[in-house]
Length: 70
Image (tube, rainbow, N blue to C red; front, side, top):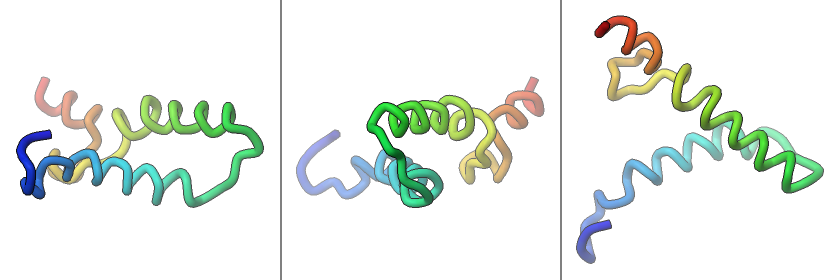
């Protein structure tokens, strides 16, 4: 984070957490904290970072973007 009053400090992180909550957290309940942690880990590493479409990549997934650039 940078200085006080800079409204763009956390925008990337806030966008990520909003996506996480809307696409994952608010859609179901988990009986245990361990199951929730495992589901969040799988969401981040199995979907969000690789297959989810990202607007900053022109609406394609990171895997498709890497294949296109390579």
